[in-house]
Length: 349
Image 1 (tube, rainbow, N blue to C red):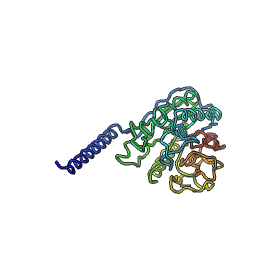
Image 2 (spheres, rainbow, N blue to C red; image 1 turned 90 degrees about the horizontal axis):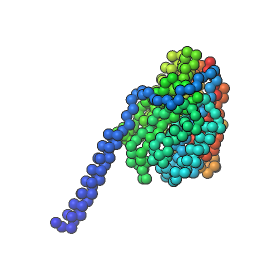
Image 3 (cartoon, helix red, strand yellow; image 1 turned 180 degrees about the vertical axis):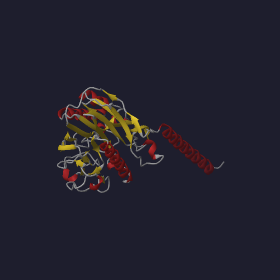
Image 4 (cartoon, helix red, strand yellow; image 1 turned 135 degrees about the vertical axis):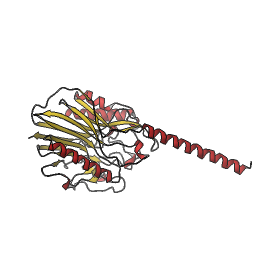
Protein backbone atom coordinates (compact mmCIF):
# COMPACT_ATOMS: atom_id res chain seq x y z
CA UNK A 1 0.00 0.00 0.00
CA UNK A 2 1.40 3.39 -0.98
CA UNK A 3 1.83 6.22 1.49
CA UNK A 4 -0.93 8.20 -0.20
CA UNK A 5 -3.38 5.32 0.16
CA UNK A 6 -2.49 4.88 3.82
CA UNK A 7 -3.16 8.58 4.44
CA UNK A 8 -6.51 8.36 2.65
CA UNK A 9 -7.41 5.27 4.65
CA UNK A 10 -6.63 7.02 7.94
CA UNK A 11 -8.67 10.03 6.87
CA UNK A 12 -11.55 7.74 5.92
CA UNK A 13 -11.45 6.02 9.31
CA UNK A 14 -11.41 9.36 11.13
CA UNK A 15 -14.39 10.61 9.11
CA UNK A 16 -16.27 7.38 9.73
CA UNK A 17 -15.67 7.69 13.48
CA UNK A 18 -16.86 11.30 13.45
CA UNK A 19 -20.04 10.36 11.55
CA UNK A 20 -20.67 7.48 13.95
CA UNK A 21 -20.25 9.75 16.98
CA UNK A 22 -22.65 12.30 15.51
CA UNK A 23 -25.17 9.55 14.83
CA UNK A 24 -24.87 8.26 18.39
CA UNK A 25 -25.33 11.79 19.74
CA UNK A 26 -28.44 12.36 17.61
CA UNK A 27 -29.91 9.05 18.74
CA UNK A 28 -29.19 9.90 22.38
CA UNK A 29 -30.75 13.36 22.08
CA UNK A 30 -33.79 11.95 20.27
CA UNK A 31 -34.38 9.19 22.83
CA UNK A 32 -33.93 11.52 25.82
CA UNK A 33 -35.87 14.48 24.38
CA UNK A 34 -38.28 16.11 26.82
CA UNK A 35 -41.76 15.68 25.34
CA UNK A 36 -44.41 17.09 27.68
CA UNK A 37 -48.10 16.68 26.94
CA UNK A 38 -50.44 19.53 25.94
CA UNK A 39 -51.59 19.96 29.55
CA UNK A 40 -49.94 18.38 32.59
CA UNK A 41 -50.75 18.65 36.28
CA UNK A 42 -48.08 20.38 38.35
CA UNK A 43 -47.41 19.56 41.99
CA UNK A 44 -47.74 22.37 44.52
CA UNK A 45 -45.69 22.37 47.69
CA UNK A 46 -47.65 23.95 50.52
CA UNK A 47 -51.39 24.46 50.71
CA UNK A 48 -51.90 27.16 53.33
CA UNK A 49 -53.33 30.61 52.81
CA UNK A 50 -56.51 32.13 51.41
CA UNK A 51 -57.12 35.17 49.30
CA UNK A 52 -58.67 37.39 52.03
CA UNK A 53 -59.91 40.20 49.78
CA UNK A 54 -59.58 41.47 46.24
CA UNK A 55 -56.26 43.25 46.76
CA UNK A 56 -53.44 41.36 45.02
CA UNK A 57 -49.75 42.15 44.53
CA UNK A 58 -47.76 40.16 41.97
CA UNK A 59 -44.03 40.41 41.25
CA UNK A 60 -42.55 39.05 38.03
CA UNK A 61 -38.81 38.43 37.75
CA UNK A 62 -36.68 36.66 35.16
CA UNK A 63 -33.69 35.65 37.28
CA UNK A 64 -31.55 34.41 34.37
CA UNK A 65 -30.74 31.20 36.30
CA UNK A 66 -28.67 33.44 38.63
CA UNK A 67 -26.00 33.31 35.96
CA UNK A 68 -26.58 36.60 34.12
CA UNK A 69 -25.73 39.32 36.63
CA UNK A 70 -23.85 42.54 35.95
CA UNK A 71 -20.53 40.74 35.45
CA UNK A 72 -21.83 38.19 32.95
CA UNK A 73 -22.67 38.13 29.25
CA UNK A 74 -24.28 35.44 27.05
CA UNK A 75 -23.10 33.80 23.86
CA UNK A 76 -26.51 34.02 22.16
CA UNK A 77 -26.60 37.81 22.61
CA UNK A 78 -23.18 38.56 21.17
CA UNK A 79 -21.22 37.72 24.31
CA UNK A 80 -19.00 34.72 24.93
CA UNK A 81 -20.06 33.15 28.22
CA UNK A 82 -21.94 29.87 28.66
CA UNK A 83 -21.94 29.99 32.44
CA UNK A 84 -20.34 32.17 35.14
CA UNK A 85 -16.68 31.57 35.83
CA UNK A 86 -17.26 30.43 39.42
CA UNK A 87 -20.02 28.79 41.44
CA UNK A 88 -19.79 31.68 43.90
CA UNK A 89 -20.96 34.02 41.11
CA UNK A 90 -24.24 32.08 40.91
CA UNK A 91 -24.55 31.96 44.69
CA UNK A 92 -24.02 35.72 44.98
CA UNK A 93 -26.60 36.46 42.30
CA UNK A 94 -29.10 34.03 43.82
CA UNK A 95 -28.70 35.52 47.28
CA UNK A 96 -29.27 39.01 45.87
CA UNK A 97 -32.38 37.83 44.03
CA UNK A 98 -33.70 36.19 47.20
CA UNK A 99 -33.14 39.36 49.21
CA UNK A 100 -35.02 41.32 46.56
CA UNK A 101 -38.05 39.06 47.00
CA UNK A 102 -37.92 39.49 50.79
CA UNK A 103 -37.53 43.27 50.55
CA UNK A 104 -40.42 43.64 48.09
CA UNK A 105 -43.21 41.45 49.48
CA UNK A 106 -45.84 40.23 47.04
CA UNK A 107 -48.77 37.84 47.31
CA UNK A 108 -47.50 35.93 44.27
CA UNK A 109 -44.15 35.85 42.51
CA UNK A 110 -43.69 34.78 38.89
CA UNK A 111 -40.09 33.61 38.39
CA UNK A 112 -38.67 32.73 34.99
CA UNK A 113 -35.43 30.80 34.33
CA UNK A 114 -35.28 29.13 37.73
CA UNK A 115 -32.83 26.22 37.45
CA UNK A 116 -33.19 23.00 39.40
CA UNK A 117 -30.22 20.91 38.25
CA UNK A 118 -28.22 22.51 35.45
CA UNK A 119 -24.56 22.59 34.55
CA UNK A 120 -24.85 26.28 33.65
CA UNK A 121 -25.77 27.15 37.26
CA UNK A 122 -23.45 24.64 38.95
CA UNK A 123 -26.37 22.28 39.72
CA UNK A 124 -27.81 24.56 42.41
CA UNK A 125 -31.53 24.01 43.07
CA UNK A 126 -32.59 27.63 42.74
CA UNK A 127 -36.32 26.87 42.88
CA UNK A 128 -35.96 25.08 46.20
CA UNK A 129 -33.79 27.89 47.57
CA UNK A 130 -36.29 30.64 46.69
CA UNK A 131 -39.28 28.64 47.91
CA UNK A 132 -37.57 27.91 51.22
CA UNK A 133 -36.35 31.48 51.66
CA UNK A 134 -39.76 33.06 51.06
CA UNK A 135 -41.79 30.35 52.79
CA UNK A 136 -44.40 30.52 50.04
CA UNK A 137 -46.34 27.75 48.35
CA UNK A 138 -44.51 26.76 45.17
CA UNK A 139 -45.23 25.28 41.74
CA UNK A 140 -42.62 24.55 39.07
CA UNK A 141 -43.13 23.83 35.37
CA UNK A 142 -40.16 22.81 33.23
CA UNK A 143 -39.62 24.66 29.98
CA UNK A 144 -35.98 23.63 29.48
CA UNK A 145 -35.09 20.03 30.24
CA UNK A 146 -32.30 18.40 28.30
CA UNK A 147 -29.91 15.62 29.27
CA UNK A 148 -27.21 17.32 27.22
CA UNK A 149 -27.02 20.46 25.09
CA UNK A 150 -24.06 19.98 22.71
CA UNK A 151 -23.27 23.60 21.90
CA UNK A 152 -21.43 25.98 21.91
CA UNK A 153 -17.81 25.39 23.00
CA UNK A 154 -17.62 24.91 25.97
CA UNK A 155 -20.98 23.15 25.84
CA UNK A 156 -24.08 24.00 27.89
CA UNK A 157 -24.48 20.40 29.01
CA UNK A 158 -27.36 19.28 31.20
CA UNK A 159 -30.23 21.71 31.81
CA UNK A 160 -33.27 21.40 34.08
CA UNK A 161 -35.22 24.54 34.84
CA UNK A 162 -38.29 26.56 34.08
CA UNK A 163 -41.10 28.65 35.50
CA UNK A 164 -41.57 28.96 39.24
CA UNK A 165 -44.64 30.48 40.88
CA UNK A 166 -44.49 31.32 44.58
CA UNK A 167 -47.62 32.44 46.40
CA UNK A 168 -49.09 33.03 49.84
CA UNK A 169 -52.41 31.71 48.57
CA UNK A 170 -53.56 28.12 48.69
CA UNK A 171 -53.49 26.89 45.08
CA UNK A 172 -56.46 24.68 44.22
CA UNK A 173 -54.69 23.27 41.17
CA UNK A 174 -51.70 24.03 38.97
CA UNK A 175 -50.95 22.96 35.43
CA UNK A 176 -48.36 23.19 32.70
CA UNK A 177 -49.93 24.30 29.40
CA UNK A 178 -47.67 23.65 26.42
CA UNK A 179 -47.08 26.40 23.86
CA UNK A 180 -46.22 25.84 20.18
CA UNK A 181 -42.60 24.79 19.57
CA UNK A 182 -41.11 26.56 16.53
CA UNK A 183 -38.05 24.32 16.22
CA UNK A 184 -37.80 21.13 14.17
CA UNK A 185 -35.73 17.99 14.68
CA UNK A 186 -32.87 17.79 15.52
CA UNK A 187 -32.73 21.31 17.02
CA UNK A 188 -35.90 20.61 19.01
CA UNK A 189 -34.30 17.70 20.87
CA UNK A 190 -32.24 19.96 23.12
CA UNK A 191 -34.13 23.25 22.91
CA UNK A 192 -36.69 24.91 25.14
CA UNK A 193 -40.27 23.69 25.28
CA UNK A 194 -42.12 26.88 26.19
CA UNK A 195 -45.23 26.75 28.35
CA UNK A 196 -47.60 28.58 30.67
CA UNK A 197 -47.61 27.79 34.38
CA UNK A 198 -51.22 28.20 35.49
CA UNK A 199 -52.14 28.38 39.18
CA UNK A 200 -55.79 28.56 40.25
CA UNK A 201 -56.75 30.28 43.50
CA UNK A 202 -60.38 30.12 44.71
CA UNK A 203 -62.05 33.48 45.36
CA UNK A 204 -65.78 34.13 46.03
CA UNK A 205 -67.02 31.23 43.94
CA UNK A 206 -64.66 31.97 41.06
CA UNK A 207 -60.97 31.57 40.42
CA UNK A 208 -58.05 33.93 40.31
CA UNK A 209 -56.02 32.47 37.44
CA UNK A 210 -52.33 33.30 37.78
CA UNK A 211 -50.41 32.70 34.53
CA UNK A 212 -46.62 32.73 34.61
CA UNK A 213 -45.05 32.91 31.14
CA UNK A 214 -41.77 33.14 29.25
CA UNK A 215 -42.26 33.35 25.49
CA UNK A 216 -39.82 32.45 22.71
CA UNK A 217 -36.56 34.39 22.41
CA UNK A 218 -34.36 33.04 19.62
CA UNK A 219 -36.76 32.17 16.82
CA UNK A 220 -37.51 33.86 13.51
CA UNK A 221 -40.53 35.64 14.99
CA UNK A 222 -43.20 33.16 13.99
CA UNK A 223 -42.81 31.26 17.26
CA UNK A 224 -43.48 34.36 19.33
CA UNK A 225 -46.58 35.13 17.29
CA UNK A 226 -47.98 31.60 17.59
CA UNK A 227 -47.30 31.49 21.32
CA UNK A 228 -48.83 34.94 21.87
CA UNK A 229 -51.97 33.94 19.97
CA UNK A 230 -52.35 30.77 22.03
CA UNK A 231 -51.77 32.76 25.22
CA UNK A 232 -54.60 35.15 24.37
CA UNK A 233 -56.93 32.31 23.44
CA UNK A 234 -56.27 30.74 26.83
CA UNK A 235 -56.68 33.99 28.76
CA UNK A 236 -59.94 35.01 27.09
CA UNK A 237 -61.38 31.53 27.60
CA UNK A 238 -60.67 31.77 31.33
CA UNK A 239 -62.26 35.21 31.56
CA UNK A 240 -65.35 33.98 29.73
CA UNK A 241 -65.73 31.39 32.51
CA UNK A 242 -66.08 34.28 34.95
CA UNK A 243 -62.55 34.06 36.32
CA UNK A 244 -60.06 36.79 37.16
CA UNK A 245 -56.95 36.59 35.01
CA UNK A 246 -53.45 37.93 35.67
CA UNK A 247 -50.77 36.86 33.19
CA UNK A 248 -47.22 38.06 33.53
CA UNK A 249 -43.60 37.39 32.85
CA UNK A 250 -41.01 37.77 30.10
CA UNK A 251 -42.76 38.27 26.77
CA UNK A 252 -39.50 38.69 24.80
CA UNK A 253 -41.49 41.34 22.97
CA UNK A 254 -41.70 45.08 23.54
CA UNK A 255 -45.02 46.55 24.56
CA UNK A 256 -46.98 48.99 22.38
CA UNK A 257 -46.24 52.72 22.42
CA UNK A 258 -42.88 52.51 24.20
CA UNK A 259 -40.17 54.58 22.57
CA UNK A 260 -37.81 55.27 25.49
CA UNK A 261 -35.25 52.64 24.54
CA UNK A 262 -34.43 52.84 20.81
CA UNK A 263 -32.38 50.20 19.06
CA UNK A 264 -28.65 50.93 19.28
CA UNK A 265 -27.60 47.32 18.63
CA UNK A 266 -29.18 45.86 15.52
CA UNK A 267 -26.84 42.89 15.10
CA UNK A 268 -27.10 40.65 18.17
CA UNK A 269 -30.71 40.29 19.37
CA UNK A 270 -33.96 42.14 18.83
CA UNK A 271 -37.27 41.45 20.59
CA UNK A 272 -40.59 41.08 18.84
CA UNK A 273 -43.28 43.75 19.13
CA UNK A 274 -46.67 43.16 20.72
CA UNK A 275 -49.63 44.46 18.72
CA UNK A 276 -51.78 47.01 20.52
CA UNK A 277 -54.83 45.49 18.83
CA UNK A 278 -54.18 41.99 20.19
CA UNK A 279 -56.18 42.66 23.37
CA UNK A 280 -59.98 42.36 23.31
CA UNK A 281 -62.05 45.27 24.61
CA UNK A 282 -61.55 45.89 28.32
CA UNK A 283 -58.25 44.01 28.57
CA UNK A 284 -55.05 45.92 29.27
CA UNK A 285 -51.29 45.68 29.42
CA UNK A 286 -49.75 46.60 32.77
CA UNK A 287 -46.23 47.82 32.10
CA UNK A 288 -43.90 50.50 33.46
CA UNK A 289 -41.47 52.05 31.00
CA UNK A 290 -39.94 54.52 33.44
CA UNK A 291 -37.04 52.06 33.79
CA UNK A 292 -35.89 49.28 31.47
CA UNK A 293 -36.82 45.73 32.39
CA UNK A 294 -34.03 44.00 30.42
CA UNK A 295 -30.57 44.56 28.96
CA UNK A 296 -28.73 42.97 26.06
CA UNK A 297 -26.09 40.49 27.20
CA UNK A 298 -23.47 41.35 24.59
CA UNK A 299 -21.03 42.13 27.39
CA UNK A 300 -20.84 42.69 31.16
CA UNK A 301 -22.91 45.64 32.36
CA UNK A 302 -20.86 48.82 32.66
CA UNK A 303 -23.61 51.02 34.09
CA UNK A 304 -23.52 53.25 31.01
CA UNK A 305 -27.11 53.08 29.82
CA UNK A 306 -26.49 55.24 26.78
CA UNK A 307 -24.16 52.53 25.46
CA UNK A 308 -26.28 49.56 26.59
CA UNK A 309 -29.15 48.14 24.57
CA UNK A 310 -32.19 48.27 26.87
CA UNK A 311 -35.72 46.93 26.53
CA UNK A 312 -39.13 46.81 28.20
CA UNK A 313 -40.24 43.21 27.63
CA UNK A 314 -41.49 42.21 31.10
CA UNK A 315 -44.99 43.03 32.30
CA UNK A 316 -48.57 41.83 32.63
CA UNK A 317 -51.88 41.35 30.86
CA UNK A 318 -55.04 41.90 32.93
CA UNK A 319 -58.62 40.80 32.26
CA UNK A 320 -61.38 43.47 32.38
CA UNK A 321 -62.44 42.51 35.92
CA UNK A 322 -58.97 43.23 37.33
CA UNK A 323 -58.45 46.91 38.19
CA UNK A 324 -54.92 48.25 37.90
CA UNK A 325 -53.79 50.26 40.91
CA UNK A 326 -50.15 50.51 39.92
CA UNK A 327 -47.28 48.82 38.14
CA UNK A 328 -43.65 49.61 38.88
CA UNK A 329 -40.33 48.37 37.56
CA UNK A 330 -37.91 47.84 40.45
CA UNK A 331 -34.73 49.32 39.04
CA UNK A 332 -31.93 47.16 40.47
CA UNK A 333 -29.57 48.32 37.71
CA UNK A 334 -29.12 44.70 36.56
CA UNK A 335 -27.03 43.85 39.60
CA UNK A 336 -28.07 40.19 39.92
CA UNK A 337 -29.81 39.42 36.61
CA UNK A 338 -30.26 40.79 33.12
CA UNK A 339 -33.87 41.65 33.98
CA UNK A 340 -35.34 44.07 36.51
CA UNK A 341 -38.39 42.83 38.47
CA UNK A 342 -41.81 44.39 37.90
CA UNK A 343 -44.36 44.81 40.73
CA UNK A 344 -48.10 44.81 40.03
CA UNK A 345 -50.82 46.05 42.41
CA UNK A 346 -54.46 45.31 41.47
CA UNK A 347 -58.00 44.91 42.79
CA UNK A 348 -60.33 42.11 41.76
CA UNK A 349 -63.72 43.59 40.89
